[in-house]
Length: 519
Image 1 (cartoon, one colour):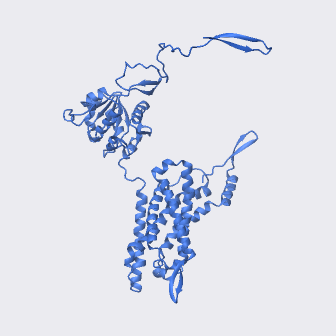
Image 2: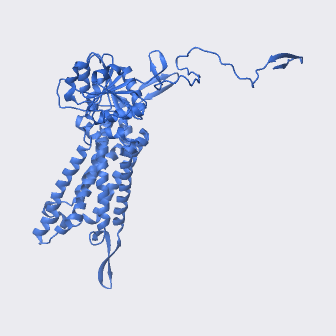
Image 3: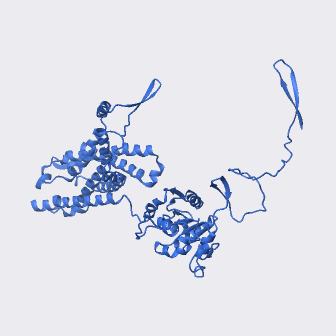
């Protein structure tokens, strides 16, 4: 189709140029073009040449290319090996299962999985999963020739063997199959999670290895199975990965053990002060109050001590950085371990605080806490009325502290930490944690306003439990207040200016003062 293109010049003249336009109704011609590389996608729509194996986009040294997924071999017909075979088969992989007795395993092997000997499975596979125990590694020496150049994925967990090497994967790479490329992975995923239709268990797969192409191949497999790969670097990290399934509540041992010991010590103290002492002095029997009232006082002490212990490492490090200099400094290893466990200590304290709150609401009455209520008389009969101001402040401070601790507890749980970024987590820990610490301290103080003047509590050279629980809370609060004094921070900065000076980066007429304040 021909059209005229008219152009008006500046002098007013008009020129016309015929232009051939493409007919939109005509079908576009299809020409044969060579295959494109480096990420280009072919637009061919041929249906006759259907590949037997699905293809995927992989990355090699020459760029992006479409390639079929590797043939996967599995050595070991245990629970994990069969579950992995079923999962790989559902994901479109060709799976070859190698076993010592193929005839005996025919009834349990999933339909579609090729069953053969171990040697044939290694020869045909490109990626080999070793799903056997460490005890049977030495029986696989005859596979060394067939393993040459293969990607070997070790899925074992830690063992009792001490071969001078740190992990089973390093033993395979250095001593048994030095010609293959060993990758550690899949040992943190249980067989039940692989068999589940909707995986509700752990989805992170920790992998490590010295060969980058081998790790890339395993990473593709992890993604195809609907899991999340986490690369931990070289093969020397395999020792760390192997111990993950054998761990039992890491970082929880210190908080739980400290909480138990605090409970035992204070329980014995309460037995002496509130049960043995009254029975010796006036013959009264306070043992019936032990299950609820006295245990609740012990829990209050444990919760307050754990709360102060959770915030003490950060406060101590800030004080050291104020008086000894800013930036990163080497601290004792015990302080580092304490700081790593501070969030778990806080969670244990939150749980104990919640139990303490429930028990306190049960017994919050003039019968148990007469000092918190006004003393009145009705027709000459003395009685207790409303709460005094310190009693109401005592309850309100406890409610605010518990609310802040519950928010901190939810934020410190794994599901909560995944939803928060670093700034939000730091804000909650620094600000909301400070609110919880201060309100918990005043919660004890308002109780003591009415209780501590009672001289009978100090007989036999003992102190009230609430007063003892106030000591660690008050100490951390006072140290925290020191770190919040602006004048002190400014004074320390002036001293550092005189001793060290300030580093300046000149940018023309302007400069930037580099003062690192890590508070």
